[in-house]
Image (cartoon, rainbow, N blue to C red; front, side):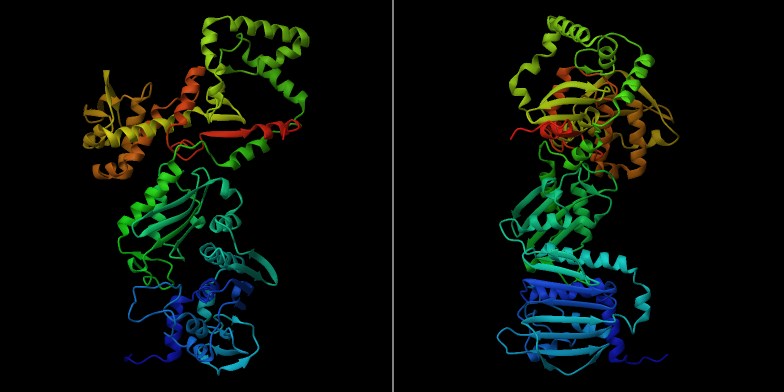
Length: 620
């Protein structure tokens, strides 16, 4: 086929395909134009998810007659200085949006410039321009798009269901609304208002807009970020690691007011949460990034969804450090919904006879071995006693037993910490008991806290290992008897190949035949742990991460494995002093609200909530 020049209609449709691929992209371009025109109110109306009708109404400054005529022609714009292409401060700048939309739909633009007696109107039907005519319209602009892709059936085939397209429309509007919280947005779909975001006022408009879009609990389960460095400013909010989602849809980033879905920014955010959130989960983040316009390139993506930073490495490090410091500060705070769900799980109306039968059955099964040790909570002994004896007699027995215990010097020493008033004022309170040999029950001034001792200790060890490694190297202790660890075929060689890296992590290993290694030294912070299991896990990690250089890059993950093996194991009975020492350590380390795998380490219950479970009145 000989080379020939394409028709204007074909050229326009091809160009439109790069910018306009679905109804949400039409709305994005039109709303961006409304924002650039200094609108304070923007209304979006759709029918059939935008395939049949899209209408965007704004109260911006509007256009004059000559500007309206040029606005539907390709590469005509008022937002760009040809002599300063690097200084782009508006959302639009290419002059392609309206011509591209007009090439694949029936487009009508009605506008009135502030101060004029009437407005002007123009129609473009699938690339065919009409005449500019006077019309009665309020100040601002109304853009109507009908029968999108009606003459491009191939494009229609690739659209999703109306429900799915509507979700994309709402996501687009929400991202734009987060970038401009002082604008009132309304979305009306099939004659029903589906989104109404009033303009935010006050000192924290972004936070209030985020709470409406993400949910009210985002405010109490996030930390604020406000930091500047050289030409970069970062403002926003980042969720606690325990508040996360299965997909990254709730990561909202803007660069100089432009909503972006930049792969580099997403990777940076995930890196910042790398050792405090579960694998495959994503945080909820709202970030406003402000930089000198000359230091970014916004013309790298057809839909302007990505940007390119001139000094990407510096920006990545700045954002990662800001997020890591924000969510990693020592704070006794965890996702409030966990506590809410726990309260809902309690059932005060449980049939008491069923409970009694269950407890009596447990007593018959486990037998009686006397009262529990101090600090250990075993309620299965107490209730059957009260049921099998007269209540007064049972109570007297209990008082006598407690009195005898209190005369015991060991008991007094063990419970000494409970009598210190300042301990209960600590953020995590004072330990009272251990439940099922794993969960610490702690009393605070305002309620109680339940701590997963294994998860909490795992985080403490992990943070201490990291601190040792990055400060002076991990201190090691020599094993009195070196331990031989048998491994699967090939795993021993992998461990030995990475012996230098493992030595930096506090593990000294040697070759011991083709399928075993000899462990001579271990980190002295670890105690009473299974060396063999840890070495086997490390071998599997090395296979996952690759050679020694890759292992070095994944040091945090390896330290996490070591911390998991070195922490208090589920099923170990702790004395009160040990429990309280654990609580005090939790108050002093970073990321204490979750373990290395992203699970919560504790749950806090407010005293008023506990009282409400028992229908008791709360004091005001």
